[in-house]
Image (cartoon, rainbow, N blue to C red; front, side, top):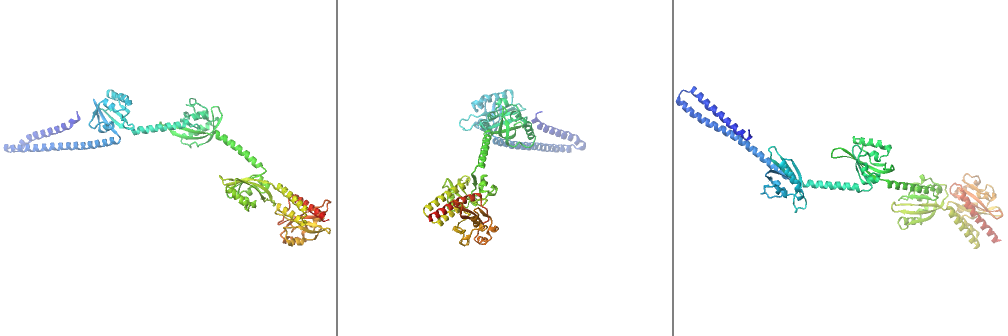
Length: 613
């Protein structure tokens, strides 16, 4: 039965039942209870009026209920229609129905750009709204829907030459249960642009990895079989793309001893274990030769929710080669620096030593670990005094490219040594670096030669003997500032007289003037008699100084050694007395230096005597 007949038939049946019961019931019951014909006639009239009123009320009630239900249904339908239109507008979605022609909704007309009065259009008119390149495909799909009732889903561009951006429509169609052909139109331009941007991004991404020469990228499925292999991978590992597709990672580029370990690590990662960290690893090429790479790893899921492993390998061959050459160069440099006779040093911005080579210990006597962190001026005080300090400031200020100078180096053993320094300033690291060369022997040789020349010049100039001897002592003290030098002359009565002692106190010189030379009479008295070197390392303890200990200590003298000088016949002419301000013992170099000066003193005394005679 048709659904639209159920309501009226139900109402008619209800009315027929009510009427039949009323009429037959009243006609049957009234005569039994009422005998008067006049009264029965009046009751029939009342009965008829009641019937009319009751039936009218029943019809009104049923009709009102149906009307009310229809109104509520119509309101709900209207609301649903408005909601559907708003939804269609928001989703850029229009609807259509086909029956000989296409009946278009308002939104569908807006999407196609048709007039609002054109509620229908033919198949050709619809196709003319599309781009020519899309019409053939769309026509086949529409024809299959109309003729064969095949579901339709096709995207097509609109023909809108005036617009700068292309408009894409998605056409859908199907046949419902009443054999009506219904469909929708939807603007999918934004989706198409997003898809296009995604394809372009993917294409750029692919080109990036395909065309980057030093970054090798490989992709592997969950069985570690190759699914992607870029050109850089072929260049790095030596395999062409067709040689690797479908083959496992470990059999291609992993050295045999590490294959099981690599496979286990990847499997554990896929099962939720720790990821493989990026690191420098040694792999192998097709020919079996090793190759060092920095390998990073990434685990992704594809569209089928399957895990894929991607490896990004950066070739470190040149880096390793350079690093190896750098290490070899550094080794050669260190070997050279460590075996140089010159001391190499580096100071920081505060002029504190930060690097020293082994030659520093040989020249200064100080251990390297004791010296690092100390200022350079701690070992060479002259650097903090004019004029050397001014020249260092010029170097630090950029006025000089480099600086070469000489100064005294304090040594651990006590005596200072003459050294030659060469400085360079690094603007980048704000430090000084340079070298230190021991030129003490050369400097002494030069000073000794200058002393010889000066003595000869003074002798030729007939200078007084005391002036010549004073010059000799002054030059010796210039070479060894820690020394206090005296020259004692021996007369015929075997008494010693002060020939020169510019650095000794006058009181002390008066105390030793004219002493009688003899054994165990101080250092000079004993040397004058014995003709041998005498060393008193500590005057407070030495027995030769028992008679002169007090006067020596009062003068601040605590050590003394004496060396006699003689004439050509071996007779002692006098002595050199070398004093120190603290207990100490002369080195072999000190004795050799003073020995050279005794020869000059002996020459001066002999020539002076010859001149007098």
